[in-house]
Amino acid sequence: MVDLATILAGFADVFTLSTILYVLLDVVIGQFVGAIPGIGPVMAMAIAIPFSFVMSPLSAIGLLIGINKGGLVGGAIPAILMNTPGTPDAAATALDGYPLSKKGKPLKSMKMALYSSVTGDVFADILLITVAAPLAIIALQMGPVEVLSLMICAFAVIAGLIGNSVTKGIISALLGLLFATVGSDPQHFTPRFIFQWFELFEGLPLAPVAIGMLAISEILNKLAKHSGTAQAVISIPKEQAAEDKCISFKEYWSCRFTNIRGAFIGVLIGIVPGVGSTAAAFLSYSLTKRRSKEPESFGKGNLHGIAASESANSAVTGASMIPLFTLGIPGSVNAALIISALMIQGFEPGPLLFENQGQLVYGIFGTMLLANIINLCVGQFGLRLWSRIVMAPESFIYSSSLLLCVIGIGLTTGGLFGVVIMLIFAVLGYFMTALGYSSIIFIIAFFLGPRFEMSLGQTLVLLDGNPANFLEYPVGIFFLALTLVSAWWLVKKPTNKTPLNSTTK
Image (cartoon, rainbow, N blue to C red; front, side, top):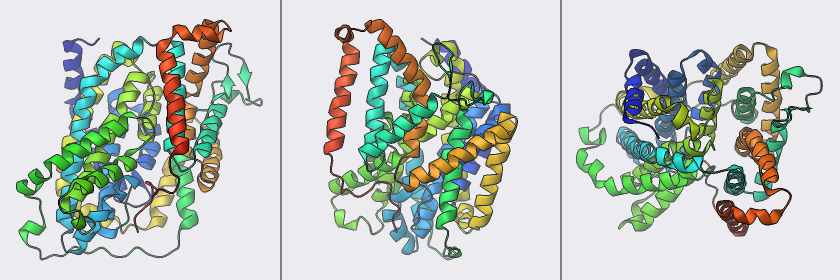
């Protein structure tokens, strides 16, 4: 589909001074926000989207990729030092990282997390570059019936795997689809639910909705739970033996199978839309502990526990981009934010990107590999600095984030209309989260809504009102059967499992 000259041109675009500086700055920002409990890369990516409007397409996507990859490394720092993960992905890292830190080896623990995170990330990115184009060729052969069946299957899996209630997951998805109908009908361009607000004729803008639901609602949630107590001061011993401050090659090599297993688990889970890196981290940790000859050492500062968690949750980042580039379906909320940045730049996510914008796609792939190298270098020299960031006052962090959101959306939408939409959905997101409904499912369904409606209309035309005509589409039948099997399994799964999104205390 993409010739070699296009691929090489895409990778060459990465090695410009502006792109390298952008990725460097973004990785630094990502590690910074990841090191602050309660902020995280998702909120930073949501805040950064409006500012990507004035950038080139490659720099805009590189902005979000750098923040995302840096945030995964930064999130492990407070988990190791304070037993308070900076991101949900790092909750499993705290199980062994914090005990090792209490033994006077915080730098050793953080460097193991850094090396394993980069290892898993590189593995997933190489797989993405290898398989994305062939899968896109297959995806282009899918018609409206197959696409509709696939989206129904994706909704079922996402609704069941995110959150503790399948019913609430389905309600969140339906609510997202409902709000996606605001604006003109994609087939007949008839206005719906605009209530004389002609700004809504083209639908609710994705950026204000996403930032309101993810960033502002999270800020409101943190402020509501804020106790007013100051963070404890973090101290790293000044006098340490050399072996307690670094990871030797022998120690890293002893974890090679743990890192490879974690990367495989992260890739497999990342391909499935909506499962998330937190689930991958805990699954990898559990399997590593089960296969260990010394399972009793886990939870007491075992390096393999840190490696298992970090390699898995970082591998999800690259793997979640596979359904984005091949099917146009975001594999995670981070991928959904990257999709919104692509749309701001005027590109339609999906397999046609390889045909129409092959150079940009491989430029993005090159940016991901570059971000991994920079992530390793910045983390190598910045761990001591980021460990101090956890002491930043929450009042300063949240007020600054709120101000950046308002300014960014105001500039993007050209006025207060987008800011009002953002605040409305911030309140909606706050109450949804408080009541146990997933805002992540809402955002994914909201993004896929127009495409879902278009595919549904085309499918009804192709079937000509006769359900028996569906038998002519075996791939569609396969996806619907997979939907029924997934729904049955998810409904039957135990509800009293330990939540994967819980924070270790």
